[in-house]
Image (cartoon, rainbow, N blue to C red; front, side, top):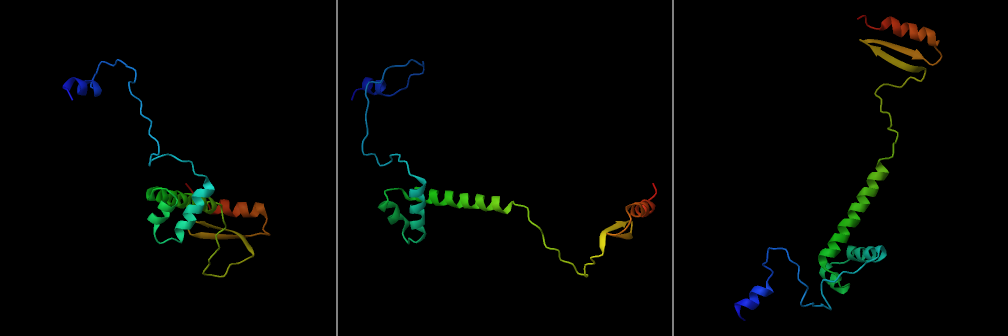
Amino acid sequence: MDDDALTTALDIRTEGRREPVRRLEVFSNMAGRRRAWSLEQKLAIVAEAEHCDNLSALARRHDIRTSQLYTWRRELRYACQAQKKVQDAVPQFVPIVADAPVRTDIAIEIDIDGAVVRISAMANADLAAAVVKALRPVR
């Protein structure tokens, strides 16, 4: 090959002119082709991988790359973790653990500077407010 043919074949121009494509190649039967997999197909292959000892053989059997199989497994794991976080985010009641027996006749217990006031559910609201006001620290 002469040097002029190589120079014209390589795109080393910097001036920004656009020239039409002179040669177009169409590749068929490419190993790296893109295919669309449905969610059901992905889940079936990943489920099959859970009981498979040789993931490379499984990937070859389904005509996919092993890395694609690992990616689908990782995506499924992330989706399951995200679903679990959503379920765990629901507010729940926390059980009470008490050392002393819980008194049911007390509705409110207030601790103000070491003075503890226990107000019964049957107490008069005005009386309870007056007691709490009297225990407030002076500023």
